[in-house]
Image 1 (cartoon, rainbow, N blue to C red):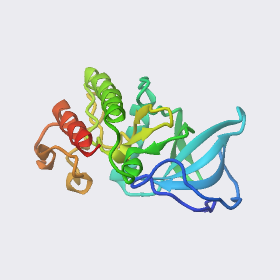
Image 2 (spheres, helix red, strand yellow; image 1 turned 90 degrees about the vertical axis):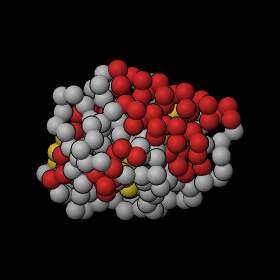
Image 3 (cartoon, one colour; image 1 turned 60 degrees about the vertical axis):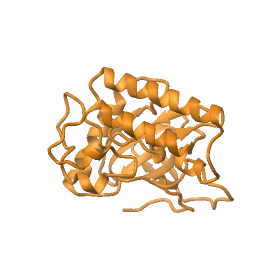
Length: 223
């Protein structure tokens, strides 16, 4: 698959903004979006900085990089689920689809953020900032749980922070919702993290809000 080239950053272990100078990247078009440069890699997708060509709006374009059925299904369900959610602490999905050249993709707003994972490499947050992050992500989870949705992957890599201290919950590829196919028990061991609730290792276990609360508590401990 032809892609723009540049210095890459990993979202699974880093933030949304890379430091240092960047070389001018070759641009490519994906439907109404222009891909400007590759800026990172997530669990299922490669992330590009781009722009909506009609609206001249900065965006991030997430292109599925794994072609197996499970990854494709998780990616598409994550896009559909996140697109219907509206909460100040959940990163919205503004578009999704399939392109003949690039395959499945989803689009999110381009924000100046850094993952909590990357932020914590410099050391723990001060108590007031940690409390703010905990409260905001807790509010996002309360919103999800009120709709019967369990995120199931709350961890620092899936929490983005702005310079102003606002927190966003991202990545719904493992989420369980009442009206979506249940993929939660498929290859589950491959997706467990140190922040996962112990019962998530049980194939027969049902997704529950308590799993997210356990993970949020583990994140707070880390902060």
